[in-house]
Length: 159
Image (tube, rainbow, N blue to C red):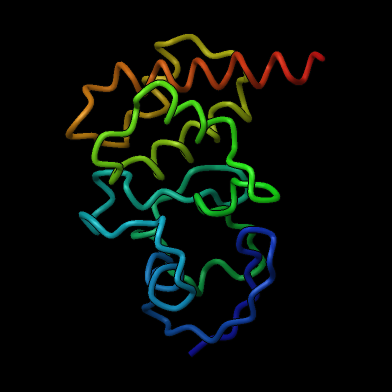
C-alpha cells in the first residue's frame, strides 16, 4: 500500500492505494465517480479518459500510486456550480450522445484539445478524438458538438 495525495475534481483526496491499483479502479470503485467507464482495459477505446494536468490520459493504463500530487479532472468535474460545461451542453444540443457510453471520454478529450486550441478545424478535432471509439454515431455529430462548443466558448470569452 502507498499513501497518495491526488486532487480529483478540485478536491484533495488522501488515499492508501495498492501498488497495482489502476486509476480507473480508484475513481469508480473507491470514489464512486461513475462517469469514468470500464471497457477494454487495454487503452484501445478511450472510454476511461480523464485529464491529468490538463492532458487526456487513459485511466485503465495508469496506476493510482503514480498519481501522487497530480490534478485529475473527471467528467463529473467539468460542471461548475451545478451548471454543465459548454461541451456537455453542445453534445446534448447537437445529438452527439446516442448510448452515451463513450461520451465522457470524448468530452474530456475534446476539452483537452480546446484548452490547447480554442478554434480547431474539423480535421484537428477528428485527430484529437482519434483514440476514442464510438460505436453509435459515426462521429459527425460529435465533431459538430465540439465545433459548436468551441464557437460558443470563444463567443462568451470575447463578450
